[in-house]
Length: 627
Image (cartoon, rainbow, N blue to C red; front, top):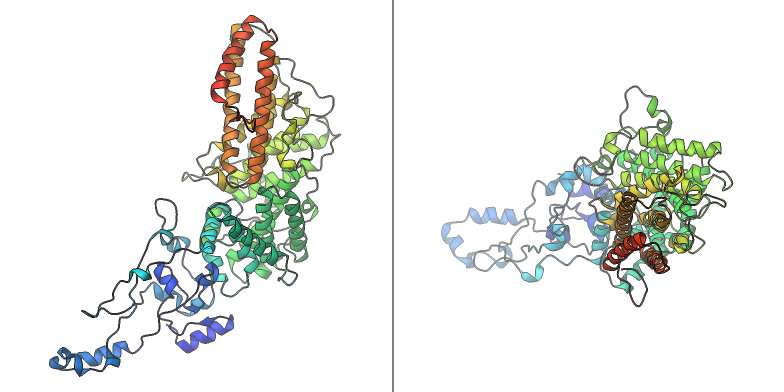
């Protein structure tokens, strides 16, 4: 163990005062059964905003105890034989685990060899870390009876602060979908030597969206985060870019599209200004630490993907980062990033040459996500006048098909081999299917009157999310054209993404707009079905009934997903009302056609269908929404 003098000199190198009582952890870390770096304040208290205090040093107690043990037995039995100042007092034992951060490695927050599994916090049955639910006492004063530590109920584990809860919530619910911020255990160590106030403030605010939090407290957190991020005195570095990204994704999910786009443009400009789009940035600013270098690579590519999704899913035009030439290397797999076991990164050129390699190792989920975003970017450059016969249209469709054909079996689903959901791979599939709908919908037969033109929650009211090109064919027979089939298939795959056994609220908020895309396509398909049957045979009627029943289930699935995500994201709440409203419109239109004298055979089918719909869709009297 380093001497106090050497520890103080180490602390001075990084601008942190080392606790003179280096043998024990601070009170907060001890009560939570966490490792402490013995600084004053320690890294964990800085990270959580807690008051960092230490129990006064009791050095010399062992010396007094040894001296007492050498006294005659009659002196030890006589309490008056020793002075009050020599009365034994309890010590807080230092375990071997506690000693890990006291040595020289504690000066560098990244050089510890502890793996993620060694530092992970055990969870209780509700999914919360045990230190957030357990009450643990610690010795404070000696018992007058046997000089053993006494348990004081007043010194039980303190209730987690709002900052603690929000940071835990951030890493549990937001980070898996946008994993560019350093993993928790690495960021925790970095806070002791780098000013990360803007980033931490943004993380706390976004984390607060997923938990019960008084509105004034949450509003104060946003005001603090926004003020720190937009402060002209803030250090313009990669951590500020990360803070902006966390903030803009949260704003976008809350329907603050204008503010989110302003923040997105600012983050993109700053990233290019400091050279984050170059491969050398990671090594120049990574401090020789592989996990920090990986964080910088992920920050650039996550910013790129978010820019693509804002442009494509909000129909906001642009996609400025697509015009920036970047040679940033590809990020690694999620488990490698979380554990800090970072492999040698692959070049961005690997995306183009990978299929030609004799031995193909699967790319990371992040790499396939980047591929999907690049294809979406090519679509956004396609002029509206360019139709299916255009070469660029064919190239985009070829890219989409190649992505599916060359996807390894391990990546063909967003579910990992251990049964958990890979949120990054989930987004890769999500963007891929959304791109297919956006490409083919204008040339499909699904744009019928009085359907989903009013579903514009993701475009901030600036026109419909999807619309057919002028002069496109309409569904007048039982045979849909190829573009319609592409749209229907992609919408079905999005519905399948909803069915994964994973918390919907933990998906990126952009998934809301992808669900809306699928809903629009399925609502229009539903509205077109009465005109799709060219034969009145019983077999055709039965097929149509089954198809309508399947479509109703898919629409209910989308409504249920939007309802669940609306607990966190206002975008989902607005979309939920619009999708329900369109479903009600279609339902009423079908009932109206039934009342205008259809053929008897069709009337029976429609009557049966209407009875099922009335049983499954309840109309809210106040809002008019289909429940």
